[in-house]
Image (cartoon, rainbow, N blue to C red; front, side):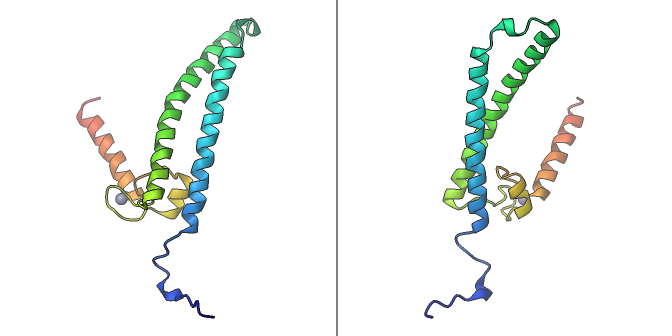
Length: 138
Ligand SMILES: [Zn+2]
């Protein structure tokens, strides 16, 4: 055996299998959003009004339309975030908090791969936003 890896050097592993999992997660998420976006557009075109003769259903339909509009905005944002995350995976900056430069908690990355902030900085940001809202007198 020539290839003897020093296990005590395990802090810097170049190809993190965890990130590979996250990359797959992101790509699946992206594919799903694109699929669903396609379906929303399709169902919008293919759904004649006659299918909703009941006023109650009309309300539901309006709600649905409002929802799909909101969803599109959210989808766009999410897609952008996913693309950025995939870029970060490629240039090796993924998993680093963009505010403090510390590694983001693994559990947080798995739960929310598009995040760019560690929990501490995210909490700070949220508190700052709350303070801003209050100081603006909203
Ligand atoms: Zn941070």
